[in-house]
Image 1 (cartoon, rainbow, N blue to C red):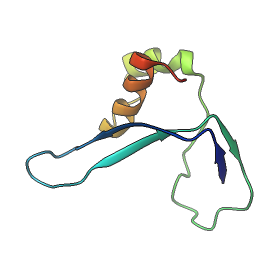
Image 2: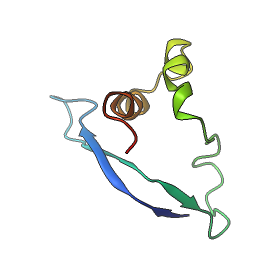
Image 3: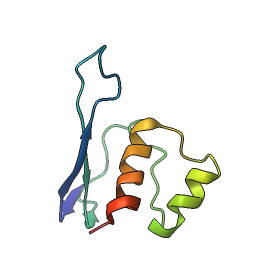
Length: 81
């Protein structure tokens, strides 16, 4: 994959106080598939979703992963641009 408009959103520590493991979250404005993925399991459930569906998906419990919540709540609070 090749991305355009890559920008850093936020860095967070999921297990602060126990393990030093910074997670860096980025957003891109465009994505271009340039080859067939060689890793079949990594990202197998990825899908594009509309930004205006994020709040409903969180409310409905579709999003439970802490890292994903950090990224999406950051987008809701500060916008996608």
